Image 1 (cartoon, rainbow, N blue to C red):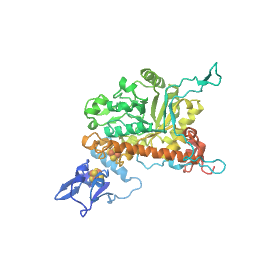
Image 2: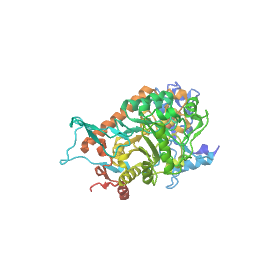
Image 3: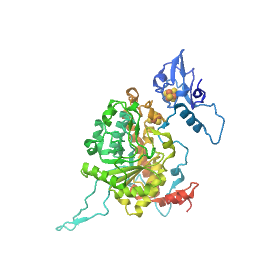
Image 4: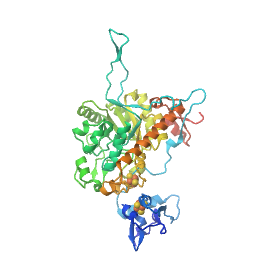
Amino acid sequence: MSIEHNIPNYFRVKIESDHCKKCKRCVSHCSYGALSFNNEKIISDDSKCVACNRCASMCPGKAIKIVKDESCLPPHGNYSRRIRNIIWAQSGTGGVLLSATGNDRPIRNIFDDLLLDACQVTNPSIDPLRETIETKVFFGRKPQKLDFTTDPIDPNKISLKTEFLPHFEIDMPLMVGHMSLGSISYNACMAIYQAVNELNILAGSGEGGLHPDFYEYGKNIITEVASGRFGVDIKYLQNTVGLEIKIGQGAKPGHGGHLPGEKVNSMISQTRMIPKGSDALSPYPHHDIYSIEDLAQLISALKEATRYKVPIGVKIAAVHNSAPIAVGIVRGGADFISIDGFRGGTGAAPRIIRDHAGIPIELAIASVDQRLRQEGLRDQVTLVAGGSIRYSADLIKAIALGADVGMVGMPVLIALGCRVCQQCFRGLCSWGIATQKPYLVKRLDIDVARNRIINLFHAWNEELKEILGAMGIDSIESLRSNRDRLRYIGPNPRIADILNVKHAGE
Ligand code: SF4
Ligand code: SF4
């Protein structure tokens, strides 16, 4: 027996035979090949189980439970089970380990160490049921000041003279982060685009081009121009509401995109303009960008290609020097900047990068916002922050730290049924989300999925209004960079300094 066969599994499939109807439904639903039917019994190969919970959810007799494997390894404070498993996996395959979703190391989340202020006595709160609280956001470059003209005949008639640079309005400070067709299924993409269209918020296309069926939702889609230039043609550039040059991604800073060949079927190959079955690996850097000047040139070329009609942005991963880079990006002509923290999601990334590179979004957004203010540039751009915005509380804290818009990925997938099994890169997602296999894709009902996203964001927006009301703030724009309404309760005062947030009690 090989060493691998003696390694304890993470999970066990427990089947209560009294409740099992022997319908074999679980076998057909397990896309990871962990279940079979033999001798009138369901047999599980626990080494293949990823705890996606599909079998348990589909079992009509509720006979299945996925449990943590109880067989334990000898304890060791340094060589945790996780590290031992990494070593065993690599000594078995000799390869770089891939992973998906976001960084799963239990690193302290700074959002959890921040508390929001609320009104008492001297500063009245606002009742969102009876008074208006605005959650609209203007996206793109904003004019430095507004000029007006007065009618020479009727001096009471004043009109706006300032020409607005490309920008638009969204109804909530929310963008679904870039998830390409390829990394997720057609049905998942369609549900996301229909939902953002209905809510008038935004979604990113990812770097996989845009399927012709999605063009009708273009007024809510920001398309991505990444180093691989997959699917980029003039139609792609001119039919969306904004363009984003992807320099980096929180889950894999300094790394290119990776769509494993198993996911590149004919639809993906046509949309990305690459051969079927080939790995879609975009280069680590853009080979035409080695300086801010080069980046400015691409920004200007894209503005030209889109006839100056849509905002052009740049996405970077949150790293140590995000603040000076952001300054360069604004001076290079970008209308918006997206910053993706080290917990940001991914469909496929080397585990070593996902788990160990980058910095938390909370620190990056606060330092970028402060630096842009010092340089007098903050009001020229929209700042989008993502990479661990899990629920409305994180969103509102990100805005108070300096973001205009929160970028959200995993919560959307979880709303669609994702169990965060971290297996997206294998293309076998049993919930029809991160897969291209037709028999799995059809498990995700587009209408149900769209409505769940709409519900989720509707709930967040209501919660935003609730908390803004409690803080006595009547618009989300007035909360932006309003650090005085945050207090820190974590263990490290240095973090509070970098965030420029006072400690609770101060
Ligand atoms: S369906 Fe998922 S949870 Fe069930 S046995 Fe297969 S991999 Fe494990
Ligand atoms: S999208 Fe699917 S494969 Fe990826 S983590 Fe979620 S359930 Fe697992």
